[in-house]
Length: 225
Image 1 (cartoon, helix red, strand yellow):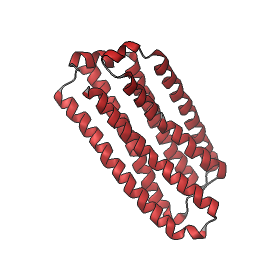
Image 2 (cartoon, helix red, strand yellow):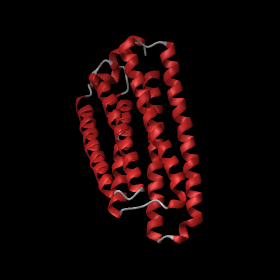
Image 3 (tube, rainbow, N blue to C red):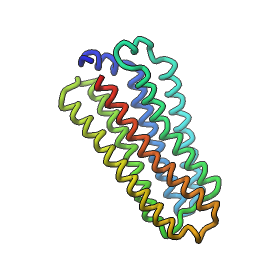
Image 4 (tube, rainbow, N blue to C red):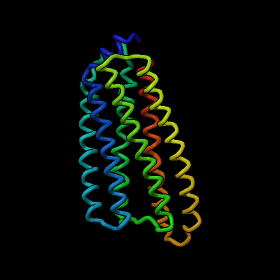
């Protein structure tokens, strides 16, 4: 694809909406981080406030997703894959959806993270949130490209941002593995149902980094065609 056709596509409203959608996802990830901090000290009143913020953000993300799906011009088939654009939207939508699921499970059961793994859990959460922010930064960079022109240095920077996403995702995997191992050593001290739900929460938090990495790959695919 030529530079002109790239700029023509990204000048259209659907891509601006993509950036807004990702920004909402980032906000939901930050709200989840705040929720988990509140839950970690059993401040369920504050946690409920962050839970409601996450719900509101998830609804806003759904609205934008539906607008993009409804109004994305079919003429985009000729220059940029409409399928890739929608794939990016649905992938990014996983961030607010996952944040809502995590907060819903934890607040419904008033789940607490065992003190023995609280520090490891916090590091794991921070890594997942950092990945979500990095994905948002990559999409913001493409919006800068849309406004200012697509140079080789822009392409390199975008590649670097996505490469950093790869690193963050691998770090998140390592932190999750270590957290699971540490919890395995003490899980016999907790009710089996609590253990089951904690492992589920670990998995869902880890998926935030996976979602962010996938979004980065789709973004590179879009600008490379």
